[in-house]
Amino acid sequence: MSTADLRFTAQTVAFLEALKRNNDREWFNAHKADYEAHVRAPMLAIIERLSQDFRRIAPDLAATPRSMYRIYRDTRFSPDKTPYKTHVAAAFTHRTLPKSESAALYFHFAPGQLWIGAGLYAPGTPRLHRIRQHIAADPDRFRRLVESPAFRRRGGVHGTKLQRMPRGFPADHELAEYLKLKQFLAGGEERNPDIALGPRFYRTLLRRFETLAPFVELLNTPLVAAGGLTR
Image (cartoon, rainbow, N blue to C red; front, side, top):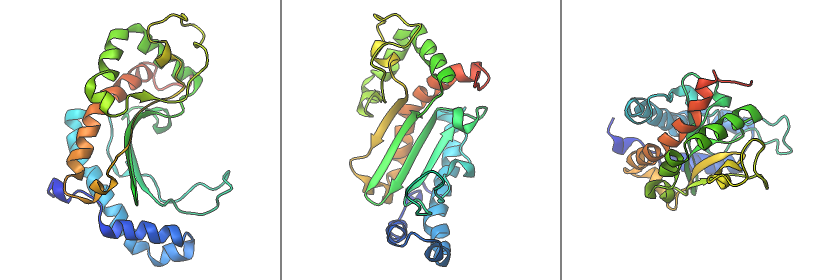
């Protein structure tokens, strides 16, 4: 398949818009064939091609059908009981880490929205401490990566922050503002989400991932060294 064909379509948009208006099991079951053809199939084709291109840009990350998020929402602890997500998404995590403990490349598409990014959203305290130690040990390397022009064009590093320096790090550390982060995220919403429907989508996605992949590798390195970890 040509990379120009690796994209979503007007039918993808139509299905997701209709699902938003009819977010119930009866409607979804009646239109499940449309979901399979116009949402799941194009996403799996994109993932299949990424599995090949990751050999070059992100060999430690897995791109498999399991990278695609399920359409079903977990409503157990949510006041919103609608059963289905109205976007399509995938995350590409480290081959040897549990999915919940790995930094990842990620993108999602919804009508009017395309988000492409990377990072680690909610690391537990042990993982967060190891990542901070890894960053603090080589400030020059970290700065070269996240303050490069290409990375800054992707929005730089962002996330929620502590008010004070975390315990164990000097208050005057040159990377203080980065070490205060409680999550490490990069990338963001694309200005033109309709690119996801056009022939340049896959090439754009791959370029974004190529810029962000070294950031994911940096975050995962101390976690792999610790054997995944919750310790």
